[in-house]
Structures are given as structure tokens and as C-alpha cells.
Image (cartoon, rainbow, N blue to C red; front, side, top):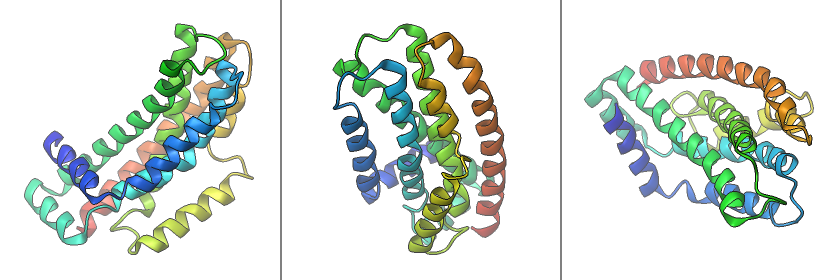
Length: 217
């Protein structure tokens, strides 16, 4: 499964489909931290909110980077369930990489108003993971071969994101609000519920997605 996941990531790299969403994600993080003073938690909350739509695009680009014949061959080679689990594992790697990137850019670049404490670094990483994992899980139902046609998948996913934000359904909204505070000790309790909701949603989406991938390949 690890080898299949590495192969999928390598294929995604060769497809160049990651370039546009990665530029959006990287450029957005840099721009959001470009205006001082950048209070540690509140600025990180804004970035975590931005990560959600950016990671949705990046996750969908990864899941749609392989052609149907390539997916069929890989599924036949490693087995349907192993193929599905490999996609999920590679998707988790991308979510973790995006979360770390959004943390390391201001941390290593000294872009925060002050040096964050260890507990604040952990909270920022947790908020980033909530956003990127939720985004990756949301992209699964719109991925190939569940939704045939890249344009339709992008349009449908974008519509869901746009409609869900006014309803405050994405978890990054309460998470961003939780980080918009000067009291770091209050944040863990406020984002714990968001984490549990994201975990439940991810398990449901991953299970349904893996079943559909296996059935349709």
C-alpha cells in the first residue's frame, strides 16, 4: 500500500496538475502573512480558513490526476481495496504537507508578531490539519471515477463550498474564530468539537469513497 501511495504521488507530480492549486495555496499563505503585525493565533486562524478551499482544489487535482486506464491497471495490480486505501493514504500525506507548509512559512520566516510558544505551535498545526483534512474529505465524493468529467467535478465542488460558507458548515469557520483570541489556553476546548466533527466526516467520506472507487474501477 505504501508503494502504491508513493506511485500515485509520483504520478501526480509528473502530471503537473498540482501546479495551479499549489500556487494558490503557497501564494495565499505568503500574502496573508505579508502584512504585519500578524498576531500569532488570530493570523493563523485566518490562514487556516484559507487552507480549506485551497486544499479542496489540491485534493481534487490529485484524485483526478490519473487517467481511467491508469487507475484500472493499478487497481488490477494491487487489488481494489489496496488501491482505494493507497489513494486515501496519499491524500492524507498531501493534507499533512499543506498543514506543515502553512505553519513553517511564518515560523521559519519570522513573520509572526512574536515567536510562538510550543503550545501555540501545536494549536496552529491542529487548526491547519482540521482545515486540510476536512477539505480532502470533501473532495473525495467529487473525484474520479465517482464524478466523471473534471469540469463537472470542479463546478460541483466549488458550488458546495460556496453554498456551505454562509451556512457556517465548514469547520474552519469556528476554528478560525476560536484562534482569534489572545488566550491560548481556551483554544483546545473550543476546537476539540471541530476536530471530532471533521474526524467523523472524514471516516464517512473515506469509507463511501473507497467503496465507490473499488466498485467503479
